[in-house]
Length: 288
Image 1 (cartoon, rainbow, N blue to C red):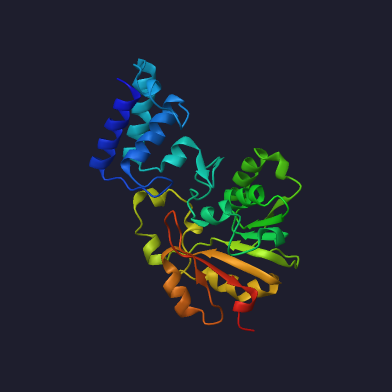
Image 2: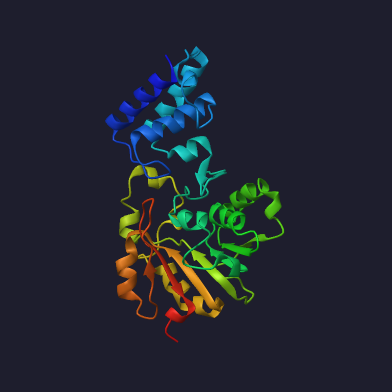
């Protein structure tokens, strides 16, 4: 069999098994390509002859093992491969952290233009960094900025440290801090980025099996899903520079956020590449 034939076989099996996507891929074909290419050690831009050459028994066995594991365990592909891409960069991923998927990646790749003047962003805070992917991708995109990235989970910070080692050039501009949301020291930031847990408790326990492999503390946010965002909105103005802004990713909770928080006016970004619930509020959008 060839890689092309194994991709088709995996796609059909994933569809028949009714597995759930959304952890870096959106459909059975993309998931099949990701896992087959990984098992075979193919580059992800592989084309033509490489896809149509006859595979060895060892190669076929490797593909069968990972496809079977994906179906039987329902573990997201990123956990099976320990890799995922975010904002154009590859990161190490395991069950200590969420699989990167925030549409904030689109804003990072655009260097936050036109919402902010990138050359005027000197200090950035990311709240709840997890794997460190948002902080690292932002540091790469914003070479003139210094970043702090907070995380309360020691296990997650271990993963973030693994990822930072792959980008040693960022060491002097990016630091990971164990903290509950905001750093203990008071610093003024030109940009705060937050992708906090926002899944209501009753929804979190009923999520598909794929999501049950992720750390529940990185998903669940109390009865109303606003446990962390409530504190972020309360204290963000104290940490923003006069012309600063906060960008949040709250997924499908955007309407609820608008309804619940009259103290701040978010502008919700129309995302070109899909996703929802990414909003921006400037310091002057907060009621004093």
